[in-house]
Length: 584
Picture 1 (cartoon, rainbow, N blue to C red):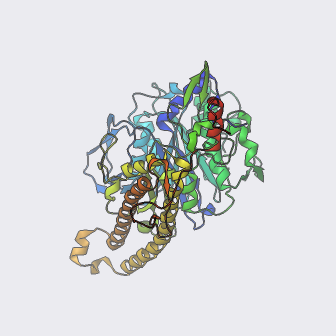
Picture 2: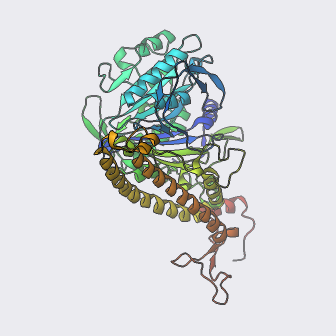
């Protein structure tokens, strides 16, 4: 039943093509689903034109009357300006100083609901909300107010919005060029559950009288009726069916990624509450026909329970998925070439003999600009609790390193302006991780294990080191807390308006130093890949990492293997060119 390239109708192929510019994936983990009481949100910012860098804006006090320019995040296009607020909060990447965290995936939805006259694009909604909100609910209010006041410029969008206590998934879309504002629904992810979305609106029916767990625009249903998108009873209204009608591509190129994340984190068993509030468990493969685009009626739940308490590493590794072990496994058909490459170069679709086909779109993809697992923790003060586990490029071949949200500065390798998509920089993590990834793409099954081992070693080490850093920072915090502000020396007061500058300095040094260490390791890794795997050969190494030599000289390899190609490649090549047969 599997086929990485599958026959599709023309309309589905067109939709798949539109997905290429804004195909992202989020995984959401609540406190009760994590091993340490963290809330986590992962995000891969996938775009062929997005440069990987870590955005930074310090907390700032603004003068009355100052304006904030709004530029479209995707293109840099100037859209307008809005009044600045008196004080904006520090943001590092997609997290602010109060541990508010926002990520997104774009689903598009009905094109007639886009408003070219709007000022607020989806990226600006994220970063302005981070500058102005101290909680997830405040962020929802800011997003709604901005979009309704200034008009919404982008297409349909799903947001993951977290703070240190709760996390929400929010689907929104504009109301068209003659109707300023948005219609939207936001649902709180139940504690102990996880959620995922990947470029397809996922909120269907929702509770109409439960403001603790569900918020929505007052006209979200009436507007759908006016537009002819819905005609049933209010209780049966489904946001995603009304505003983002599902098609083949929405299932196969988008929902399949969310299904795969659930499948991995739930060990193949989806536990959830049914419409009557009863907890039920079903096999993940009960929903495989939906994920593969064959049966719309088998939609899987919005929220499920993971099979175990999750760590940052669990979530990071989900972001490296290529459907391995499922019917959509990208490593097993001839599209993977002779070395099991789980990538397909764009465009996603192609035509052969008058028939149209589409390749799979997995969570891990080559065109990622940056990605992260954001971790927010209520059991720590805000100065310590928020961590951006941040990386650049393809998640499968790149590392995450911890950057505390209270940092005073961004590491050089992630700094905005250190290179761009058409300017190479030897000190940029984006370019270095791309070098390693593109090296692996030529012989993936041979070279990737070396990179994967480096990633695992680093991330496991950093989980241990951040635990130590947390405690050291907490000790500094507690010492500062015991000293009244009036007892601080003048120099300390001048240096920082708050008493916890020493905490922030410590965590800044920790973040920057480790980012520098792993960057240097990646420079060395790329050199190792060249030396070890040159020309399709594999040189043997000793346990200490040195190369095995021939015993007569220390510069001639003593053992070289040549792994060749996969059995699938041999089979297909023999069928295609079977007249050339070696002597039996």
